[in-house]
Figure (tube, helix red, strand yellow):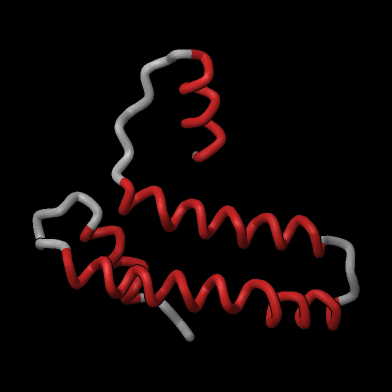
Length: 92
């Protein structure tokens, strides 16, 4: 998603406006995917350790951020429903 938004912006194409509240989790999830790409091919125990060291802090910060942002949003906010969906399913 971020890549598409950036590519469209560079080409001067109109991109749908993206709320900063919606964009922030995408950036953080992209960071998790970067870690996963980096550890691809490592032994299972190495991947687990890297996830504990690198991914866990990002995921914990993401949950904390989403809970704080959700507390600021009204029920009618377009990003409230997706945040609620994620937080109801958060396992941690």
